[in-house]
Amino acid sequence: MNIPLVDLKTQYESIRDEIDRAIDEVISTSAFIGGPFVGRFEKSFARYCGVSHCVGVGNGTDALRIALQALGVEPGDEVITTALSFIATSEAITMAGAKVVFVDVDRNTYNIDPEKIEEKITAATKVIIPVHLYGQPADMDPILKIARKHGLRVIEDAAQAHGAEYRGRRAGSMGDMACFSFYPGKNLGAYGDGGAIVTNDETLAVKARMFANHGRIDKYDHELEGVNSRLDGLQAAVLDTKLKHLEEWTEKRRGNARLYNEGLRGSGLLTPVEIEAVRAVYHVYAVRIEEGKRSAFQDHMKSKGIATGIHYPIALPNLKAYRYLNHAAQDFPEATRTSQTVVSLPMFPELTGEQIRYICGAAREFSH
Image 1 (cartoon, one colour):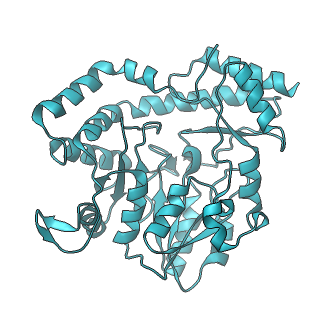
Image 2 (cartoon, rainbow, N blue to C red):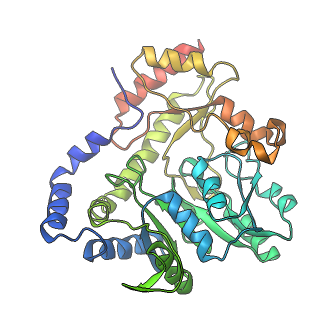
Image 3 (spheres, helix red, strand yellow):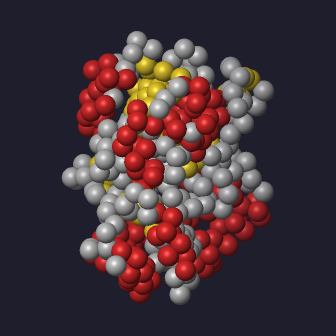
């Protein structure tokens, strides 16, 4: 049996007619940049997230950078974020001219640890960016409380959390702004790059839209220098079509996670922990393995035809890109430990019970 980490082809086959019709409609009307398909998706996705505004942009990294710009972040400011994420989170902070300030993660959820945020706040701090890693929302209530106490803004990095919920609120609806990626492998993925910013603040939405479109309010009327970062019509049509299936796919992911949790009991792997009153959407199903055994485990799974991944093998402060910050690995012990022991198992809605049982059997075989 051969099982990939993600299977985009099977998903396409399941909705091929809908997708092909949507793409054909865009091409036949030449609505490639802006236009009705982008507008329709922005309205649909804002409604899905439970917010008033959605601004489609070129990718998730741009979404973060543009959101920071809309909030007035500038050189000399500091932005706090998690020590465990893809580099896009911290990269966008630097792109906006600010200094990135890392905070260690919670040992159970791998999300930013709210108890360690306040010690990193200075007079220069302007924004906190919690990441909903692997599809589980960060513990937002204490984060928002800290932000209010210190007069800070909050941007949710929801690139892995389309449809996730925290205490009855959708990911993307809790911060001042939130950013999504529609990279093809995401729970809601385009057939190319794409991203979005969502917010309940009309002023911030207008600023973000202006900045993403060369800083203009009319074709040749530019109030500021912006960037060229737009969600195109083809991707918007694909996303709007897929959005109709997202709830069904999410429940299948959650069902797959439950099967994994049951099947991996006694395997020696530490399965994901959901915090109280959240709905994790399992963009990644990440398990922990005993330190020093990850490579052997991955080799074993590969020999059984099972693909695995690592999200992420190096904690952000430990990357060469951030050597200038002079951090040591022991400054972020939980993020460092997680990065050295985490393994991602196959996770996609079309994964079958038979495949999951096979994967769990192979994992138990390794431990025994």
